[in-house]
Amino acid sequence: MASADTFNPSMKTTLPADQLRCAQYNLMISQLRVALDHRTSKLPHEKMKEILDALDWYHTQSLHATKDINGDPVFLELPVGKWPTIEMSIQHATDKFDRLETITWLNPSCRS
Image 1 (cartoon, one colour):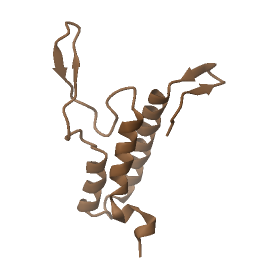
Image 2 (tube, rainbow, N blue to C red):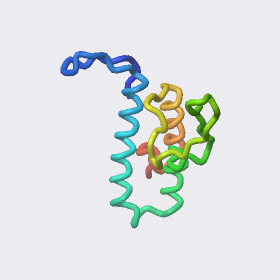
Image 3 (cartoon, rainbow, N blue to C red):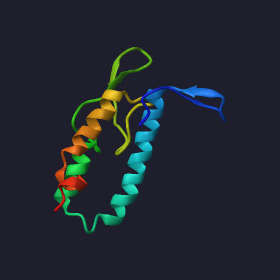
Image 4 (cartoon, rainbow, N blue to C red):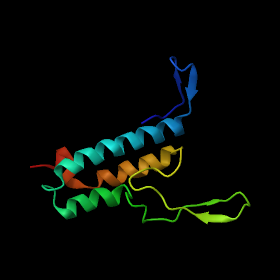
């Protein structure tokens, strides 16, 4: 994932690292969705749940709020399996991957 702003020569613009990281994360999630859709019948529910929980796929681990045009707080209903904003900090990305690394059956070095 992007750790620094990246110049895109074809667009002649610099892509901010937090926005690029968010786009890369959402692309990865889309690819994961496709991969899981084809394996869901063979993947036990517990293993599927571990992945979804690690990524907070359904956004059940925290509330997300913003301000409306009047400056009043509004709680958001977020799209499933997608990062909720256009930017993703390095800390959020690190947290997601750290959670995935705790799933021992996903780690090839832990397989017998």
